Image (cartoon, rainbow, N blue to C red; front, side, top):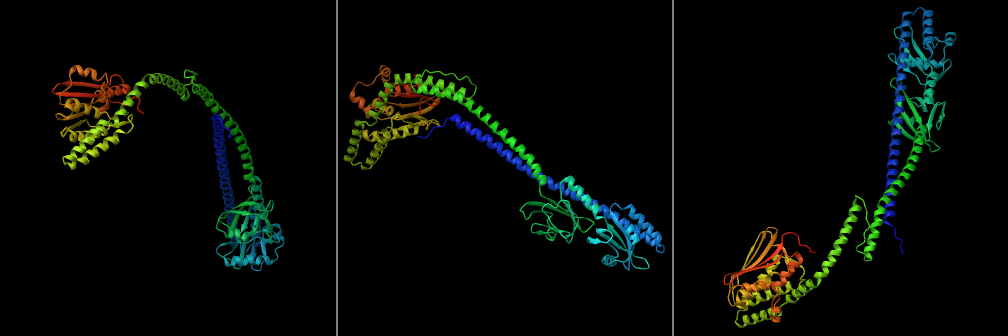
Length: 579
């Protein structure tokens, strides 16, 4: 047998699961959002640093250009005085030695006039200067920046060279950049910001950077690769942000930014160590939040389950006692919420049930007797016998066309009469049944009982008892018109009056004596034959009063030889006791 789980336990589990799920969902979404924001912020921050480095090189480029123009002006002014030129070159070098390795003039024979100590002493021609002089000669109006190379005097360097125009013999001005100073600047940023920066030429050569913290890089011959991706492939792509994998499978983020003045690219490689450190702190907070959410879920679930369980068990106990037949049981739930309302409503319901049981015991016998009378009168043997006799008379007289009318009306009345007597029907249905009844009576008695309907708007759907009007109309024909001995109109009115609905049947026949009226509604016909012919008016009167109260029922007024009026009075509102 399947084990039953109590409602409070179900509620506890549902609330616990719901609250905990909400906390986990919110925490997970928050974690992912913060993670995304950290990544976005990290990229933004790295781009800001790259922008600052680019600005640094832009300023340096301007400084180098200023040096070149200063040398150019000095040489042109002292073209015939070599000593003055050497002195000014030395002074410019000493002034800018923090980021310049040498400042010198390259002559057509590849000898130099230098500013540094070494080049002042050793000024012999060197073959390494030929590409520099040739590039300056080919780009006489611009400044040429070389690729990094190994210089005899300056070491690993980059040279900015500019052709000196307007002099009597070919000459170029050259400035060797101090790449060690640039690299030290990048290393300082790497250490402070936990970054890995480098300066790369357009051909993929490393100018400075990467040497202190190679990490997962593969550096050979002043170039680098990440996994299967070479420096040339990285520079060829138009994207500024790349996600790459090392040979070990570690993912790294790469950002690149071309410099404004040099044909170089600043590269930042991040193995997400900073991000992992930040996320590690975030994960600790996330775990603490989940633990707190778990405890909060337990507390909230227990409190809600207890809040529901106490009154629920009290109501359950009360219902079990009622189930055992103790209708007078009382268990108070003093709460101003739905459970309190439910308990008080349950008490009122028990009281009403007790009262209804007592009332039902009193009315059961009377109601059963009245319903049986209705059932016995629904199919009237004499009515059926007389109707069949009418069909026989019609056929004998050759009025064949009336046979179908009688049969159709009889079928309608029989179908209508065999239904549940306690079922309510609309006034429209009752009027149709009476119309069929009058049609048969007109043929039976060879009379013209005209049926006149005067129904107030909206009352055709008013609910009434089944077989309400036929006994009243039968009373008009039987008493008012002497059982078909005379003919006349039968009028049915329905109207509202105050809080009541009145349905009345009026005829202009013989009328009812005053001493007879007072007994009609208080006694049944004593004649057995008469009982079988019709439903007594007192039967209808008692049914109305039984269902709607003593103030409702039938009212009869009659003026002999003039008019008889039988009124059925109902409440205009909903019926008490209707199912």
